Image 1 (cartoon, helix red, strand yellow):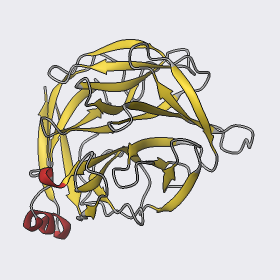
Image 2 (image 1 turned 180 degrees about the horizontal axis):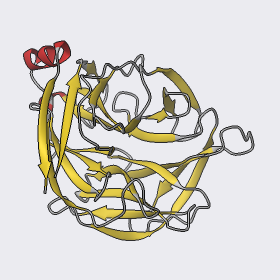
Image 3 (image 1 turned 90 degrees about the vertical axis):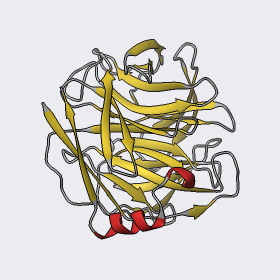
Image 4 (image 1 turned 45 degrees about the vertical axis):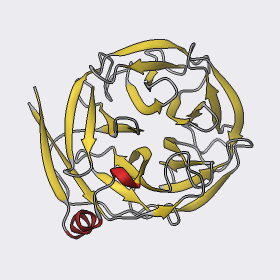
Length: 285
């Protein structure tokens, strides 16, 4: 059995101009470190503060919020990958079930998450054992089981996805794993949820390895984390133009999701988390 320790630190509430998600929402992120931190990120500066280092060999990838059920999902991709839910009031992660797909150290590995509110479907990405092209996966939110939707049909690997409920679009990004090669750039794509096929929207100049993206409910644009520079970036969903918000206080963000204020811990609880952090454990059998 393994123990997962989650820590939540800091608090930030921001005012949105669109009612698509909520009048106020908070940007959460998960780190792909062995401590499995959950953090709150300032969308104006990119700064976040991690909680105490927790024990356990766990690697979280992807973050997606289902507003209908109030559930925040992530993937534990260490060992036998599983879908987990995260309770932001207690910091506890609960395993829902194995996804039946490879983990971080395997060729056929799963990563990232997006929740399509139009069909109540969780999507993830699966890397091909032959490298390059990625596959779109649908995940049963009740059991965690993953099914292959189809291939993206791209020469480069998709590394992150997110869903925009306003435009009804599933976005993805490919990443340039050779950041010193100026002729290779990451790409923003739109993914067909019925077939998994990806259509390139634009190249993403100024970023090479996106490990996480999310739709910004305040601007309608995208926010992404570039693992090479450790920076939080804005992404124009039409042109692919990027802008630096700021460098995070540490690298390793592997999932991003905005959560409406009604699902965020009360101010008193958030203040307590900022001072010392709450720790909770879940056991995997």
